[in-house]
Amino acid sequence: MGSSYHRKVSIVIVTICLINIFPRNACTSPVIVDGKYSLDSFFHPIQNNEECNNYYTNNQYVCDPNSYITYPDKQKLGDIMQKTQNNPIITCPFNNDGIHFGVLIISSFNDYHSNKINQGFDMVESSKFYAKLYHEKWEIGNEQCNNGILIFLNVKDHHLHISTSTFLKTNYISDEFINNEVMPHIRSYLKNEQFADGIIKTIELITDKCQEPLVDKRAEREHKSDNTTTRKQRYNDNGFWIFVILISVGFTMWLIWYTKCCNCCCGECCDGNPHRRRRDNNNVRNEGVPFNEPGMQYNNVNRMGYNNNGHLRARNVHKIAETLRKERERKERKRNEREERERNERQRTDKEEKLRVEQRKNEQLVQNGKRTKNGGGGGMSW
Image 1 (cartoon, rainbow, N blue to C red):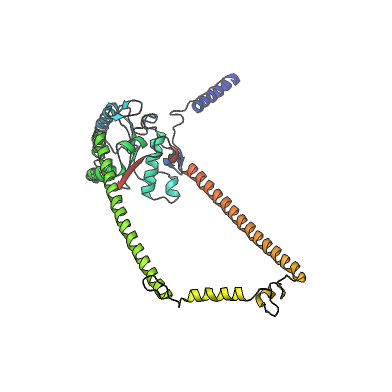
Image 2 (image 1 turned 90 degrees about the horizontal axis):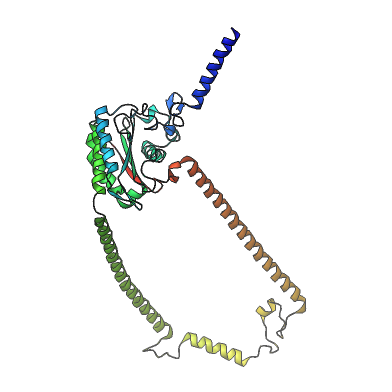
């Protein structure tokens, strides 16, 4: 009896250990907070294909937990994504490859736990964040080619965001193309709740854009460069004439002042030049009266410590030296205080910058991702 009981207990313990060691979908089980799945640790479309309802898609990255897309439409979507992935229309630095798409469809932010929403982020910023986050977590696209795109669809909140990788944004798909060409074409599909058709139309538009020759883009950049050069040349010409006008006005004003001050006519100064009279009087006074002539009253000089013979008074030498020393100390003290304030300001600025960098690293993992660090994209509401 006792051995049988211990045997059953041992079997239960071993079973529990095996379940804990080898859980289903290990490392990808979503986190539940307050009875809701957390968007910060969500399902993986391949490892959690049952929770994502990822069937008949040829193992493509499609996660639709609420089944907004029917199985026949998912099969059609998976075929198109597989075809686009195998079509080498992208010229990578290492090899030619297709475009890797991922699709994430949620019902609403209210149906899930979201740290971004709790932190006060609005729907648009939160959609952009989670699109880039799962672009990174799901590793959409070839890491060397960096050719992935993730489509994030929020059904009840009526918002769509497309996250593009760095390589595709730089060479093929600009943010202007996403916002001005893709979004207007799929708005009607989303309004009519034809989500599969809208996503398929998005893939087709992006694929057609990537198949355009890159020569057109280079020609467009050269055309923009020519227009910029023309504008710069026009600005330079205008600046030259403005400079000439300013020089002419300045010379005219100087000529009027010189004529009025010197009473000159045709460049010949008259004897009534007040500046010349002042200089002549100074010369006469300096030449006619010696500096140390007895009887002269040097009031300004006496204040500085000179006697009537032009020599320093001995009793004032120490006072002047003390005054100069205090002045030097005052200037040195001000300079030290200024340097201390500048040093403290630099230290405070450095600390604030380090704190901001640390916060960005902790709160926005997507900014440091390999695929979307400098990537782009666009979004819209319908």
